[in-house]
Picture 1 (cartoon, helix red, strand yellow):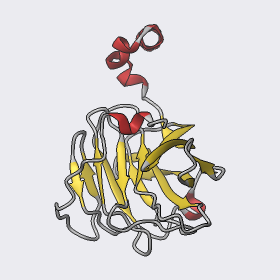
Picture 2: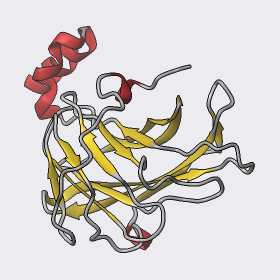
Picture 3: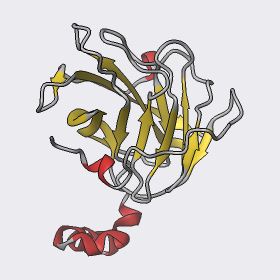
Picture 4: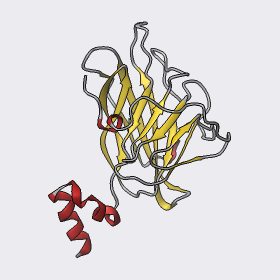
Length: 210
């Protein structure tokens, strides 16, 4: 079993009873067990997306599930005109009733910081979400599973970030696998905080200071 990085520090234990106001974005900070999700989105990013990626149907290493992740990026949100919103939905690509349900999608934010999260109403809505101290967000469908052959509602993460890259997110359903998706990348102004991560971080910091 390959446990994806976004889920290592977070784990599956999450406070799920917290209530939030519907029809309003949820401000999420590192370490927050946010609880139930509000519904305030349209159906998805639509034609406003500047980037879109649909991953292949990806099986986990143990053959327990197969998942596909759709991701998109739009520009302009409550953090600023150039700030990016990252959109995600997960498709449970299993076509046989094996009794498994996708219960988490871990999205790396690459650096800690407040973000706003919301989702569209409809089928496959989240039961809960949380953000670990490293900045990774985990979405949970534990109480409202995405059944075999079904896709979840869209989730959107409003961030202050202004650039993106195709990396991986972690999908977990008893076992886990990394699936390709669009995610934020660190801003130059935060490189000073990444020095401890190694020479690459230090070199980037020096370029920024120059």
